[in-house]
Length: 254
Image (cartoon, rainbow, N blue to C red; front, top):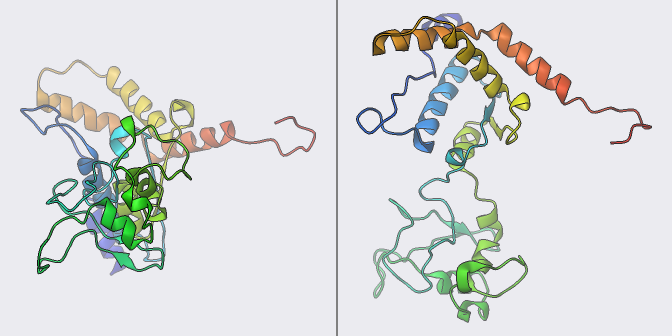
């Protein structure tokens, strides 16, 4: 049965043809990448045993570093109770110093503030910062630098362990399935397996005849991507490993 499932999955792919532009598919953002990554995870888990762990590498681009809509963030938090949400949904629970969850919103049946955001003052008080909760909401231009400073409410929350530990939406998705996610280093194409594969695909596309319509262009794009087969990908990984080998000789000056 496992073999049958494998062959059923072979016709599927995580690769998508995205037509950018307002009149087409819009613009590729973190939400699109998460949806594509989820498809890749499903294909991996369909084709490998339940104990297999995948490592998903991504370009270190700003668009890939977005947090989830409900992610913990002290940015723009009001100091006092208010009908407020950071995005399209309420912020997720925080973690109190004793490890218990902390709800940032009053209950819907609260007698005076049903469903309101508690505000930074109340959140800090619940965490034991009674005196610090009376500080100003934010320093001018939020130029605080010392993580140990107690200069404003926002800076104190910003340096709380649960706020610091907040992960990116992409990493949360991958790790929720028990896999590994990482970013390739910035500005180093020679160490980036993705850029190596893209470069080979673009070279192949450049050598193809000019296209006359969108259908031909899509066929050429797919053909160029298919030209970067598994053997080439493995070679790129091998060359990257050669570039990153560190001398082990104790006499070497590193």
